[in-house]
Image 1 (cartoon, rainbow, N blue to C red):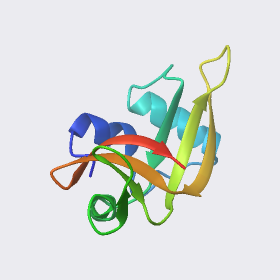
Image 2: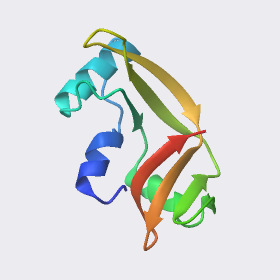
Image 3: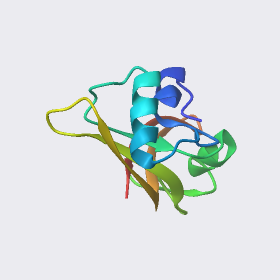
Length: 112
Protein backbone atom coordinates (compact mmCIF):
# COMPACT_ATOMS: atom_id res chain seq x y z
CA UNK A 1 0.00 0.00 0.00
CA UNK A 2 1.14 3.50 -0.76
CA UNK A 3 3.86 1.80 -2.74
CA UNK A 4 6.39 4.56 -2.49
CA UNK A 5 8.12 3.63 0.75
CA UNK A 6 8.34 7.28 1.79
CA UNK A 7 4.57 7.73 1.45
CA UNK A 8 3.84 4.49 3.29
CA UNK A 9 6.07 5.61 6.15
CA UNK A 10 4.15 8.87 6.37
CA UNK A 11 0.65 7.44 6.40
CA UNK A 12 0.35 3.73 7.20
CA UNK A 13 0.47 2.33 10.75
CA UNK A 14 -1.03 -1.16 10.96
CA UNK A 15 -1.63 -2.46 13.54
CA UNK A 16 -1.94 0.90 15.27
CA UNK A 17 0.96 1.62 17.61
CA UNK A 18 -0.30 1.36 21.19
CA UNK A 19 -0.16 4.49 23.36
CA UNK A 20 -2.13 5.96 26.27
CA UNK A 21 -4.02 8.57 24.19
CA UNK A 22 -4.44 9.91 20.65
CA UNK A 23 -2.33 12.97 21.57
CA UNK A 24 0.48 10.74 22.86
CA UNK A 25 0.16 8.60 19.73
CA UNK A 26 0.58 11.62 17.44
CA UNK A 27 3.53 13.03 19.33
CA UNK A 28 5.27 9.64 19.25
CA UNK A 29 4.55 8.87 15.60
CA UNK A 30 5.38 12.31 14.23
CA UNK A 31 8.75 12.33 15.98
CA UNK A 32 9.55 8.65 15.34
CA UNK A 33 8.87 9.08 11.63
CA UNK A 34 10.78 12.37 11.47
CA UNK A 35 7.80 14.52 10.55
CA UNK A 36 8.02 16.88 13.51
CA UNK A 37 6.72 20.38 12.85
CA UNK A 38 4.65 19.15 9.88
CA UNK A 39 1.31 20.94 10.33
CA UNK A 40 -0.90 17.89 9.91
CA UNK A 41 -0.67 14.21 9.01
CA UNK A 42 -3.10 11.33 8.80
CA UNK A 43 -2.21 7.77 9.77
CA UNK A 44 -4.26 4.96 8.23
CA UNK A 45 -4.64 1.85 10.40
CA UNK A 46 -5.22 -0.69 7.67
CA UNK A 47 -3.45 -3.56 5.99
CA UNK A 48 -1.76 -3.07 2.64
CA UNK A 49 -4.24 -5.56 1.19
CA UNK A 50 -7.24 -3.41 2.18
CA UNK A 51 -5.58 -0.20 0.98
CA UNK A 52 -4.71 -1.78 -2.37
CA UNK A 53 -8.38 -2.68 -2.89
CA UNK A 54 -9.33 1.02 -2.90
CA UNK A 55 -7.57 1.23 -6.28
CA UNK A 56 -9.62 -1.63 -7.68
CA UNK A 57 -12.76 -3.25 -6.24
CA UNK A 58 -13.32 -1.18 -3.07
CA UNK A 59 -12.91 2.31 -4.52
CA UNK A 60 -14.73 4.71 -6.80
CA UNK A 61 -12.88 6.90 -9.31
CA UNK A 62 -13.02 10.52 -8.15
CA UNK A 63 -10.64 12.32 -10.50
CA UNK A 64 -7.53 11.61 -12.52
CA UNK A 65 -5.73 8.75 -10.74
CA UNK A 66 -7.79 9.37 -7.58
CA UNK A 67 -10.03 6.84 -5.87
CA UNK A 68 -12.43 7.27 -2.96
CA UNK A 69 -12.88 4.30 -0.66
CA UNK A 70 -16.36 2.79 -0.57
CA UNK A 71 -15.94 2.00 3.12
CA UNK A 72 -14.50 3.97 6.04
CA UNK A 73 -11.01 3.33 7.39
CA UNK A 74 -9.79 3.70 10.95
CA UNK A 75 -7.49 6.73 10.90
CA UNK A 76 -5.76 9.09 13.29
CA UNK A 77 -5.43 12.75 12.29
CA UNK A 78 -2.50 14.54 13.92
CA UNK A 79 -2.45 18.34 14.02
CA UNK A 80 0.38 20.52 15.31
CA UNK A 81 -0.77 22.76 18.17
CA UNK A 82 -0.19 26.45 17.44
CA UNK A 83 2.99 27.87 18.93
CA UNK A 84 4.21 24.52 20.24
CA UNK A 85 6.01 21.34 19.23
CA UNK A 86 3.15 19.08 20.34
CA UNK A 87 0.37 17.40 18.41
CA UNK A 88 -3.32 16.85 19.02
CA UNK A 89 -4.66 13.51 17.82
CA UNK A 90 -8.17 12.60 16.74
CA UNK A 91 -9.14 9.02 15.97
CA UNK A 92 -11.89 8.66 13.40
CA UNK A 93 -13.55 6.29 10.98
CA UNK A 94 -13.66 8.03 7.58
CA UNK A 95 -13.53 7.30 3.91
CA UNK A 96 -10.22 8.14 2.28
CA UNK A 97 -9.11 9.40 -1.12
CA UNK A 98 -5.84 8.09 -2.50
CA UNK A 99 -3.96 8.41 -5.77
CA UNK A 100 -3.38 5.13 -7.57
CA UNK A 101 -0.96 4.16 -10.28
CA UNK A 102 -1.08 0.85 -12.10
CA UNK A 103 -3.71 -0.45 -9.66
CA UNK A 104 -1.71 0.38 -6.51
CA UNK A 105 -1.93 3.28 -4.05
CA UNK A 106 0.95 5.75 -4.26
CA UNK A 107 -0.25 8.90 -2.46
CA UNK A 108 -2.65 9.76 0.35
CA UNK A 109 -4.90 12.67 -0.69
CA UNK A 110 -7.44 13.24 2.13
CA UNK A 111 -10.13 11.81 4.36
CA UNK A 112 -13.80 12.64 3.82
